Image 1 (cartoon, rainbow, N blue to C red):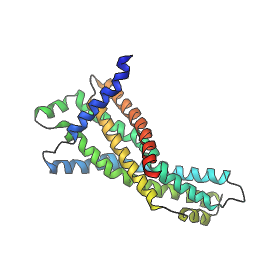
Image 2: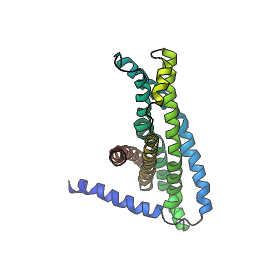
Image 3: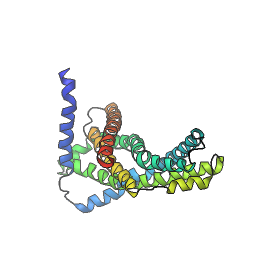
Length: 251
């Protein structure tokens, strides 16, 4: 019982120690620059399609549901476009997209580093005098923190376009009313808030997933377990920080 209570604090301590190694001064900056570009392509570019597909359908569904449920003559139909825009900016394109990326990117990172651990590739790097934690993890963190905000902007644009597309195709509302709602009472700070959140979530996804992969032990089954733990832990922490950041940035 006591062991179960202490275990999360032990993991937090080991996570902090690992992050200390990760953010130590790089030996050769040029190597890290090339690896950051590689990780941007591997972790960021490969996530564009799934982000776009999910966003366009989510924008379409939000618009459709709002159109069906707001039948009152006292409520302006332009409110539907406004609600879709705010839903995409404030919550979906940052938090929900981050949860989706935690499953895709997080499991990828945990599996990759976990496999390197059990095949002793990380030990080989350490023997050669390379800071394996910084070499393997830091480029991934920098790449996701820089690239995930671009995915959020893409998600916002495509999600709102999905709502417009539904309005045009289904004729459930006048498209001009939807566009009017998109332009109503727009606050640029909402975009800043969304980008700050996704940057924090990107750090959480990458660092937590790398932590579980880096500390994997045993055989290939342990790599699978580490990947599962990484996704679950990342999702829980994202939801916790979503509440904290909303409290700090919006209230």
